[in-house]
Structures are given as C-alpha cells and as structure tokens.
Image (cartoon, rainbow, N blue to C red; front, side, top):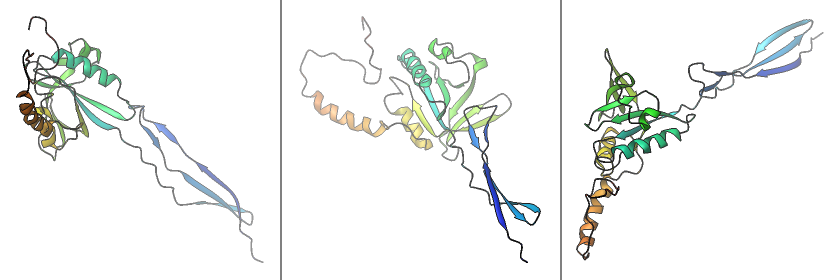
Length: 222
C-alpha cells in the first residue's frame, strides 16, 4: 500500500534588522519557506530554495563644498547650513568639505552649528582633504596623521558663491574628476561672456559697474 504524501502547512517569515551603528540602514534578511511533509507517522522538514534577497539601496554620498576665498565666504556658510539641514539622511550621506579664506581644503566632521557660526575650522573637527582629479579614485583624499583615506563621492554640490564658486572653476575640477554636479556652468560661462560682449556695446550711461565673479551682495560705500 502506497503511503500518501500530504503537504501539511507552509510557513514563511522575514526578518528586518536595524544596524546599531547606522539606524538609517534597513536590511531584509533572506526569507525562507519551510514545507512540512507528512510521510506515515513521520514528519520531515524540507527547506525550499531561498527567495532572492532584497538589497538595501545604499545612500548616495554627496560632497557639499562651502566657504572659499571670495568675498561671499560668510554667505556660503549660511547657504551650506541650509542645504545640509534639508538633506534627507535616509537617501544621502553628506560629505562636508570646507574651504578656508586662505584656500585650505578640509573635510569637516563636527557639529553643523559650527558652520553656521563660522567656527568649523577647529583642528579637532577637520582633516586636510582634496578632490582628486584621478577618475579611478572618483572622490576625496583625506590626509590623516597616520594614513591617507580615500572617500568615494557619487555627486558633488558646490555651495560656494562668487569667485571660484560661480564662475565654473570648481565645476571644471569636478568634471575632470568624473564627479557629477548640478548642471555645470563651465561651458555656459564661456557662451555668456561672448553674448554679454555684444549686449554691452548697446548699453548707455548711467551704468552700475561691479566685478563679474564677486557675488551679488550690495556693499554700502563700494
């Protein structure tokens, strides 16, 4: 007499784990399906093939550059603070790169309020860093005391105003490094200068003249 095989039940489960070191990352472990098959008086457990793992979408690393050598240094800090605080931490990891008035590049690890208060240059919160033009690196070189660390960057968001920030200079470096940025103004700036030269010839006095790459603030007495 043949023993009849009868499937008794199916059981499935999923486990979600929050990483203690980074609560923003949510991982879904493999889902197993256990099938219990009755064979006479014995039950034997059969493990079916695993379901495909759902990979966690890694956060994009966004380099936010602020500061700079222009007269718009303070404005850049306020703009950067606004951008960083409105960035969705579940989707983006902010890599903060500050440039001092003297032109030193530093990666900043401190509290965001220090950017707003212009006290971010504290040596304990910063390490010297620079964007590498090497496309194989595709990111930032950080010069720690005992080692050099490479941080890969997915996209860069320059928040520099005035000279070197709004004239396409920094965007040119990022393009050379193969790092994506918001719509670049390098080529557009060249066309703009050509078009402006035609428009200027048609202007009449009185005129208000200001530097082309020094920002947009009105300085009393200037």
